[in-house]
Image (cartoon, rainbow, N blue to C red; front, side):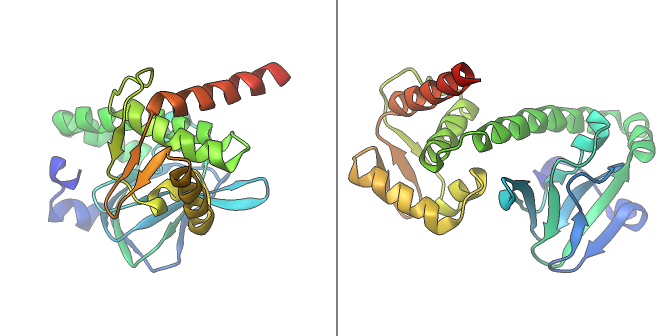
Length: 221
């Protein structure tokens, strides 16, 4: 994504900031009036769910984060922690408005990124509302299929370029627990595990499992 945005040295001089490995950039529930563009390093997004810290995502250089508080004018919905020594550009509501005025083409690109991020974050939170760990893992593959506009009503085999660690991050789960679930699915012939991908044998089967669980949850409310 970084190649899509023309942030030169002048931007870093004006908006640049650095965080040390392990340093908290912002905390869940605190007021938020800044968002960030990650130039270098990795940032972990975490959230407290049922009194446990769960990793929602790991961001790489070239990604934005923290914009939801500005867009929704709400407290931070998650905590961000520097996984390495990181460099970021820090923007607030005031200089973002200046950015939109002075660089309209860049502003349009940013707004498209934000619109997709709003959808992605809400979709990932839907995964965390599922109580059963195995269903959360299944819903990760449904989410990825939706992002690729795959028809989940088809009984088709789908390959995803994804690792067990990434699946664990998306469903807020320890990697070891996620690997156990994936291995169980493989024994059931529901998936095939490879070094560089995971193949779902029948995406419609996964879709029906998640839909059934959501309907059951809504009925019990």
